[in-house]
Image 1 (cartoon, rainbow, N blue to C red):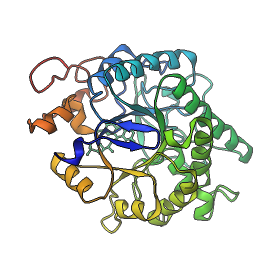
Image 2 (image 1 turned 90 degrees about the horizontal axis):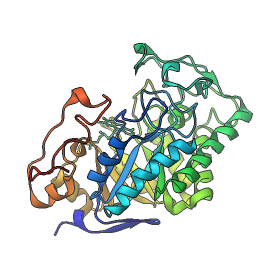
Image 3 (image 1 turned 120 degrees about the horizontal axis):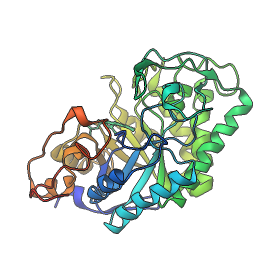
Length: 357
Ligand SMILES: Cc1cc2nc3c(=O)[nH]c(=O)nc-3n(C[C@H](O)[C@H](O)[C@H](O)COP(=O)(O)O)c2cc1C
């Protein structure tokens, strides 16, 4: 049988198989960033994944910035996440939470009152975000974090990791790609600081490295992973040398002994992100982007990583693991309902047999 269906251990995380559900923002939380009943159904239906990495979730009010995305700083949010993790565990699954502070990739319209848009430097991302109240809007002009405020943001992440454990998550994943706060620090363009968190590559990776160290100290390194995509330009990010930056972050956190690195293919043809990760990181590698069952099995057999994550295939195929095992065809999904509220196009996809998931 293919290695895809064999169990594997990543730090303290026990995976029943090597098929990971990648994090996907689906905008089904409440306007108060609280997980909903539809989210409980959606994650329970996908619990046969070896590991679910639940969607990007804000560690603090300032970390919010997209429409109807969840957070994990209030007691109400923690309580609602408990229903999700209980459902996944009852169905035999393992689940981590992706912590996503969007930094400057935000609109005030999507933030609670009093929350601010902050970033390493006061440079607006030339991009737009959707809001329920004003439609598509330009992102906010961010306020640059003062040096002494950076420790406060790191503390928000540490607290969020503890909250995630209290909510029943098996661990957390730090979102270090797609132009959000950690990548805003890592990018030579978005980070124009002249203090210990800007300038040299070692300084630019300091923020995500310190966040990961704080979270590892709080909940154990074996329950902490991180996600990177070197060369990703999403949300108007650019970096003069993405390979060097990715390698520097790996080296900075290598002594921590983290559970895993969730590594995405680079959009740059000249940059082999999987090979880079293998060279610079001894944590288990979860490979991502554009895999199907055959290519995932081949990558694991070839030793490129220990597991493969799937995002889009999990949207319309809640029983993706069973479909891959049986060689059943995969179905597509409706783009129009990717980010709309409610169960439609979210938790109403069927299993291959036609049964409700
Ligand atoms: C609807 C949607 C939402 C996504 N949201 C996130 C997210 O919250 N965090 C993240 O790291 N990646 C996010 N991604 C990227 C996916 O995790 C994944 O890297 C990408 O879709 C490529 O994998 P795939 O080819 O298996 O779909 C999202 C992708 C999609 C399609």
